[in-house]
Length: 153
Image 1 (cartoon, rainbow, N blue to C red):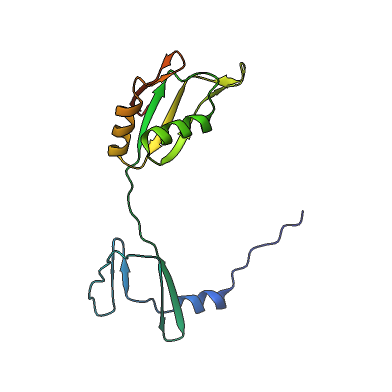
Image 2: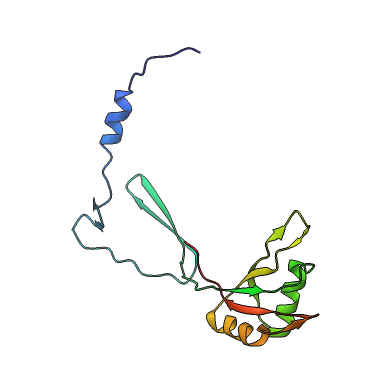
C-alpha cells in the first residue's frame, strides 16, 4: 500500500474562512446579525423551509416531536403452546384495544413459550382496562395473571 504525504489545500481553506455565517452563533443560543433572539415554536406537521442569503441557500426540515407514554403489562401463566398471534387476538377480542408491541419469550429447547409475555399499550388507561378484564381469565385449566411490568435496570 502506497502512502502519500498530506498537503492541505490552502486556497480552499481561505475560501471557506471568507464565508460569512448567518447571524451570531454561540453555544446554546442563536441570534441574528442585529442580535434579536430567534424563537422556536412547535409545528403541527412536517414542514420544509428554505431561505437564501446572498448566494448561499439554506434548507431545514422541521419535524414535530410528541412524547408518547406507552404502558407495558406482564401476563403470566400463559399456556406453553399458545403463540404470540393467538395471545394478541385473545387480548384484542376480549378488551377491544390496540396492541403496540408483544414480546413472548420462547424456549428453544422444548420449542414452546416460557409462559409469560409483555404487551405494550398506547396508554395507562387502556392497560388498566386490560388488567381488569384479563386478570384471572381462564384458558383451559390455567388462570392468567396480569400485572404492571417493572423495568429491570
